Length: 207
Image (tube, rainbow, N blue to C red; front, side):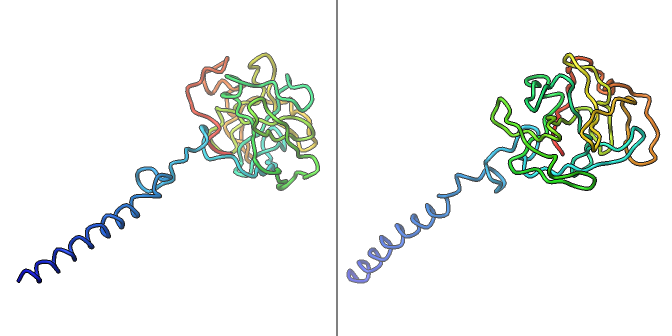
């Protein structure tokens, strides 16, 4: 009887450490994941981390202009001289720069040779077209919207960009830039109710 009890005690003392090791192995290595099994690495504040950006064209009431791969209208800012962006801080929150981590790609109606990048003050790479730093507008929350057209914010005008790389200075903000679409009564970025960049919407979440 004593010998049988000794064998059971030895078996128990062997199994317990093995179970502890298995539990530790299952719990360890999970530090890179947050609750729900998703990686704990946080996303870019305005949406997913920027990747390769496609710049294409779309035709609307104001003519043919640059858009992102998902159809979001793209603008230039008259205050920028050369390829260096002067839009930072509150300006960049209302007019999110088109940023990328890879070489931008040319979509329909654009030429890859006209695309480039410029380094921003925060170290990110902003896409340029014909040397112009490119931007989205916070108020354009749907593909084809051009509410930023003609806006006079942060000291200078914002214009849609023609395939030739020039500013499209005709027309004002519209709810749709799809071919054949009519003009909206909204003008110059007033859709957001902000003339100085005080909109409460979170922007730059899609491109």
